[in-house]
Length: 166
Image (cartoon, rainbow, N blue to C red):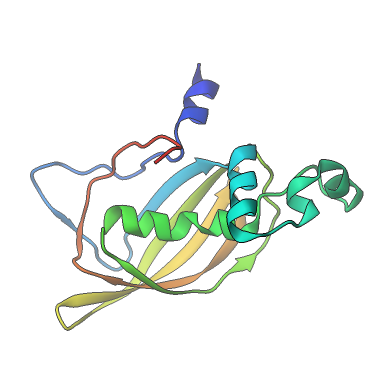
């Protein structure tokens, strides 16, 4: 049952908010979401991006190249990071992202994305926020980097559970 529940949700909210008190983003705050990337996710990403790398599509090729199986494209894993920000700050504009890939991610592994606000400044009634960005599997760092986003507000939206089709 637990395994099935994990497969039904594309991410798990880690922060919960009271519906009456707005929570404001401040430096040091950490936002997280988890996701399991499926075979279908990789195939759809390949179609949309025209990325036909056999490491993502052919398990025999991946194994011959020294991996345990088919890899989830690094940019697909990294897509968790702007999703975390946009889900808390609708209307956010993702301005930049640096990435350093550390470990492979395989189809079916649960990946937790984490963004930590490192600096926030106001500019023309909006907020420029810098974030430390990381993704983990089983507590091991798979990628890290830094992101900058323009936020319409510092008031965080409460998370809603969504299915993979959202």
